[in-house]
Length: 312
Length: 312
Image (tube, rainbow over all chains, first blue to last red; front, side):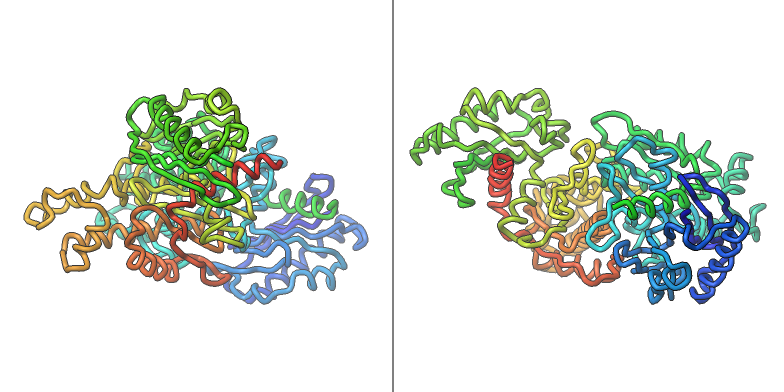
């Protein structure tokens, strides 16, 4: 039995996974600004309940896999860098925690890489060994598999910063410190600013509302001028983000995930069309699809990583 | 003895290389719009002269290495895609040509990759196994080494399109078909357009001149307002291009090459400063240096590729 954990900005998902099947999963509320030790305590309580209710003894735990929203040293199992999420986790010793609490091994990896591992093994990427994935949500995450291996790089960050490629050299400052990042130009954390920056905002029907992309796409569909223009701006930004992934990593397949993909029926055709017009792929058309197991990919990726590492 | 060839937009460099030493090298004028077969004929004449004048017999030729300015299949030794340079070379059979003309093997690779191989083995990248290189010239080329291996990708284009990452989502159409590429926003082929698009151009001292970057930097230094503003625009674009390379490939070292680097004394400090302010490198400062053997890197890279492949 593998304990799979996906630490997100609002929720932490926790599951028990056996033979690539999620036996049970649950989610607990979290907050990336509270002391990380408290998040871990909450995770422990939840794990203990799951183990008890499913009669799993400690000796049956093969290992723990954790997806983390930041840059991760997946050899030393340490958080290397965060971007306004769980900033104090850099000091946390995951190996000691797993050993002392469950007498088992832990495998830590970036959350987007975990999701991609899951999609690659069990979802949208099955059988395809060159994939770039982008997740559009609060921020924009990314991960890349080249020749059947996660791209890692010298300092564990290759493939992971697709949300932080500059796509607007004259653009806004990102939380990461860079200018005009994909995520600083179009992401859920940016959406409010984008709307408010438009002179039409004050007289618009959406003034004062906390809008997410799902509602923005709805308003745009219904003919809201401001919503349509902000939506189209975001679609252009995401298209450029996807083209840069293609030009950077030369994949066969792009998988798009994240909460924003609730509007995949609009997003995927728009991006496909843009890529067809502008990407340099002399070999043919690249596949662009949405994630197939969005609610399970990171947990199954964590399961895959644990079992693969234990085999080696 | 290895015959090393670097096919460029204006010149083709040809050298004889033995034990990593260039015995002799020469350059012949070329034109990327003429029939490729004619370029090859000119190359043959030059090779034959070099072989004769240095008393090299055909049986002493170990192989031929060719750097080509386009996307290259380095397994089948074919040109896959060009961008307004030697467009008819896609039909050319390099293997047959080398066999029939010199009874030897040929190894074809993208020109930026050849230059990086040369810098890595014999120049600015010695001993460093994670490098991204950008060449600023007529266009903007790139290549990447991760963990001591050229990044190739599924269709031979990973690492090669650093000049064609969108860095301005609202930007100009590139010759490659993409919008707002590094090269479409700041490169030698773009320079004239950048100057003419400025309202100050008509009354400026440089009106009507064919300016290259070397003169632009000189005019800027002397206080030319228009030159300074276009120069600074280009420096910002190139900085974003470098930051995107760092965020994409996670190297320890950036090597900058190409004709534009004649002004390295201004370019390198500007880019370093920008990278220090904006790149996400929690592990420390990345090295950014200019190519050390700009006139020899591609030929020595070709030599390295030939001898390495013959050993395997």
